[in-house]
Image (cartoon, rainbow, N blue to C red; front, top):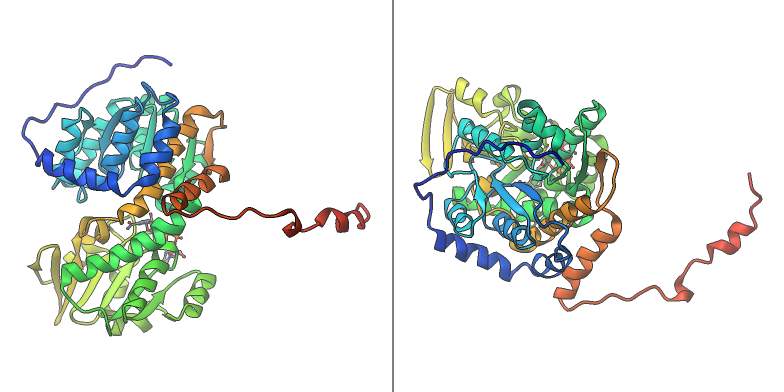
Length: 425
Ligand SMILES: NC(=O)c1ccc[n+]([C@@H]2O[C@H](COP(=O)([O-])OP(=O)(O)OC[C@H]3O[C@@H](n4cnc5c(N)ncnc54)[C@H](O)[C@@H]3O)[C@@H](O)[C@H]2O)c1
């Protein structure tokens, strides 16, 4: 591989948090991460990542920090940045810096400072990226083309980033191998559904101090994330409604016991609305007339513009901040409350996914990078192999004290016998 000059960003001298507090948070994660701390560490101990430069660009809080330290302990040179300007934790940043990791992220940033941080991460010339929303991958392609060409691989966290990688590949603009961690069963079956479901409802209630039992909660988008949010809200006594554009998923929502309908039909009675589409402006200007007074809007999807906060701000006559992380927009005689500026409410307005969930997700990511580094794969988009997915689940079950039965010979379908009776075409 050609050596390339690295333009390092200016180092920060002012601490942005308390390293000991951050370290305690990371230690709490370690205690509750049996897969990452066991099976993943053991796999990475083969030295395959020694000296490999890996950029970790995921919401920068304690669970991401623990993943970064596991990679660093395996000998990788790790550069850490955030995947959203609103979700970086200063204590964790300082804890990582105290351990000698390179961190190019500051808490309380805005979109401009975040852009600079991502470009700074790019300038470290990573060999691999653990990305979220393909945020660093896209920027390297656009603004650091030489470094982009030099990339060896990307392991992508989210549904949104997976779509972006497929688009880049289809356009012939992905000159290296990538893994879509989101397609691993140990990721989307648990992280998207249970992780986001639990923590989005938690954040909604913590931020607003409102009651869920009897609330009328509308979920926009019924993918894995939407299913989880609707299921948790329903289990806590909310009346649940779903807006979907895919007829099969809408039907599934109906059979799961939620009321489905178009925006104009379900929004007017909603007390809380949560977007989870992975697209833009799921609640946009055209929907504003249907929102009732005092409604709470929150987003759990990747884009901060799933709720079109800019359009809301432009249309409002008065803006107030009644509570931390809530901005109220006056539209005529109605007040519309937006949580966490439209950023992912469970992360920007909460603590992010449960540790146990991220133990699985980051096991996929850690093993995914190891797989990329040790396996010859064609350029383009790949899925983590089934045996790794199975091994992660088995390691998690083992940590719970569970071992599974294996299929006994008499339980096998004797398909060979009946196949023999069918003439070849
Ligand atoms: N907050 C978190 O912690 C977290 C965790 C995992 C994923 N995500 C993000 O959540 C988003 C959704 O993820 P997913 O796995 O559920 O995706 P998905 O693709 O499985 O589901 C999205 C659903 O939204 C529907 N949809 C799209 N546009 C719509 C619109 N305008 N109106 C109504 N429905 C619409 C689609 O038909 C689809 O069924 C993505 O951006 C993903 O990256 C967030």
